[in-house]
Amino acid sequence: MKVLFGTIITLFVSVWIALFLRQDPGYAMVSIGQWTIETSFAIFIITLFLLFGVFYFLVRFGIRFWRSPALTSAASRRWEQQRARQLFDEGLQKMAAGHAAAAEKVLLKGASGSEMPAQHYLTAARASHQSSEEKWRRDLHLRKAEECQGADPVTVQLTRAEFLLDDQKPEQARPLLESLHTSHPRHPGVLHWLAKTYRQMAAWEPLEQLLAELKKQNVLSNQTFVELQQQTYHGLLESAAAGNSLERLRALWKRAPAALREEDEGFLVDYATALRDCEAIDDAEILLREAINRRWNAKLAVGYGLLGRGNATAQLATAEGWLAKHGEDPYLLLTLGRLAKRCQQNDKARDYLERSIKRLPTPDAYQELGELATSLHELTYASQCFRSGLQLLVGNPPEKQGAMLSATDAAQLQGPVSPPAPAAT
Image (cartoon, rainbow, N blue to C red; front, side):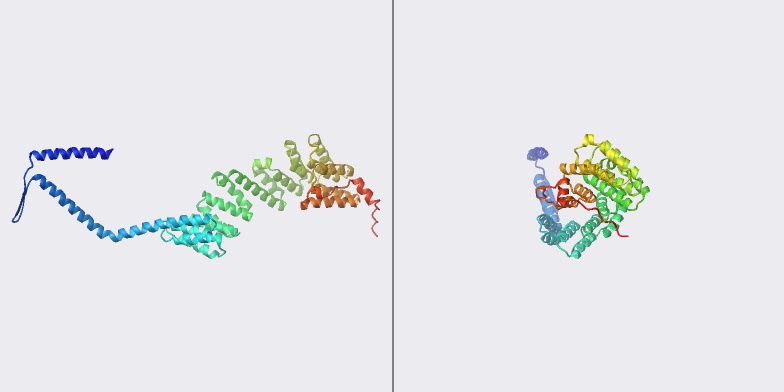
């Protein structure tokens, strides 16, 4: 629109000047030495414009001729940069296609002419890391990337740390990442790889301190963060339990996230087991009992039966109180069998264990029943229980395990059992 408007104005002005000069063309005379030039004013103006145009053209031509080496160099540089971008794209395509060795060569070929040579060397290092066991080549590319002008040192160091973790060398990556964390405490990449390093080293204490920042910076997805949090506190619990320190255990339980204490049955059972090992059996029993009363869970029920200490009679009575609502649960029946066996109520223990196996055969139930049969000198029945449990462990399908004999049939096959001979004095 502006061009059209300008063109119209130019035409109007030109027509006006032409009409004006037609009425009075004017007079112009130029005298140079013995030379005198006389002409109309219009021709004089036109000649001046033409001379100015020739002069301007000659000046521009001279400047361009003078700058031609620099212009040629700039054009060559632009071509090199365009070629480097094409090679970089080609290298990425080859890596995506699984041709890492070919990608490395292509990326290095375009590094010298690239606007961002560090990217070429970093990607070439990644390609070498995937395709070659010669780690020196990968490390050489990383050093070249680090030396490039405009390279981001954090990116280079993170790439180096990533390679070290892939090589299962977290002890070398740790000081590198901790140094980066000191200077860049909120950098998502630094937090991500430092957490992975601590996880690979099972360094649960520093990882616990890192969890809050990981969540604040949204470094991990919600599911990944929950899994990392669970693994961290399970590791801390295992470490505290190995130290057999009741004070450390209780301090860990207090600072553990509420969701973990209430929803992670495995963590709760492991904590109760650690309390039992620290002779706090009453605390462990109360913890499991209250958790089961709040929300029924098979893992908690099994953990209750595995406490193995405390008042077995009271624990059996508590567990039998759950039969009204969960009497068909095979894991509750397994727990009842274990508790009855601890109370030496053998008939009741056998009944519970056989009912548990009838509803869901498990290696644990077969083992408990085999041990009970062994204590009662029902060796054939015990052997069959152990064999059936072993077949479950190795993964044989139920139809190939064979039907287990009842206790009565096994006793008939075995015959009367002689009491053990007294020990010689």
